[in-house]
Amino acid sequence: MNILITGITTGFGFITTKKLLKNGHTLLSPVRGGWDRLKEDLDFVQAKQNGKLIVVDLDLTNSSRLNELKFIIETQFKFRLDVLIHNAGLGILMPFELQNENDIRQQFDVNFFAPLEITRLLLPALRFSKGKIICVSSVAGLVSIPFYSTYCASKYALEAWAESLSSELSHQGIPICLVEPGGYVTEFANRSRTKMKFEIPNHLKDIYQKTLNGFHNMMESKSKAGQNPIHVANRIVKLAESPHPKFRNIMGIDAWFAYVASRILPRETFRKTISLAYRFLVNRFSSDNARVSE
Ligand SMILES: NC(=O)c1ccc[n+]([C@@H]2O[C@H](COP(=O)([O-])OP(=O)(O)OC[C@H]3O[C@@H](n4cnc5c(N)ncnc54)[C@H](OP(=O)(O)O)[C@@H]3O)[C@@H](O)[C@H]2O)c1
Image (cartoon, rainbow, N blue to C red; front, top):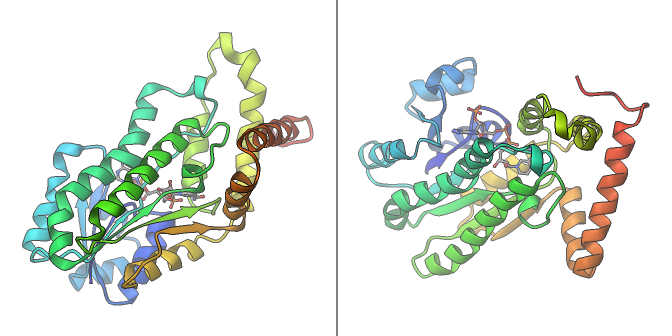
């Protein structure tokens, strides 16, 4: 099959790409910094030499260049695209008041607007091949979590779009599915924590310093104890190769727990429980006994 997948340098995308290559598929991927980012990996080098992996040096936030992907599909894939996997993503995870507008917009560009734009460009090729679309969303697209406010908003938006589009495209033979993981060990949390290491403006220090330290430490400990990303990669490969992929794919015990609780408990009770649980956890991790952020 011919497959376009985003976000292959690390995490779910990296593992999924290796598996898809092993299964004999041909892949196209936009990568910031291009081939140089992947040249250390022997499987990728071999796939490039065999023409099984095509990499375009492309930042997904650069919407004016996304049509380069369409050009490659028309010329090198002869208009055939069997699977489109929107995997790239980033999380600005911290108290809302400390987030800056540029970061929030970049997060929406990568998590939401890039998948929309790429899908619009490639729908003709997907229709031609009766292809499918896989969106890597998050349980944060189903459940609202403190400090994840704008990340949740970007993933809720992706979910709403995908669910509506699935009905629009069903009669055209183009299935869409969502993968909704909980916490898995990838570069995702590290990248978000890097964003947290900044000077809090003086007038907000009293309000947020302790909370941010606590949240930072909590993320660090959670990311070490996170689940194995191989399970998510296996699911993405299974969906890519299945003739009838399942629409919703909640992944991980934490995601299932949060999702089921959000559906069983009355809305207000659930919201209060999440709020209390986070306050308790952040306090615990910001206490003198907890490791203070680097
Ligand atoms: N890990 C989790 O616990 C978790 C849970 C739920 C959902 N998710 C979702 O899973 C997906 C994959 O995340 P991951 O956990 O594998 O994280 P990751 O290891 O940080 O990988 C993210 C990928 O997205 C790419 N990317 C980010 N911004 C980009 C841009 N502007 N242009 C091109 N590529 C860009 C990154 O490339 P660079 O190397 O160039 O930055 C990287 O390849 C994301 O959509 C994320 O929201 C993750």
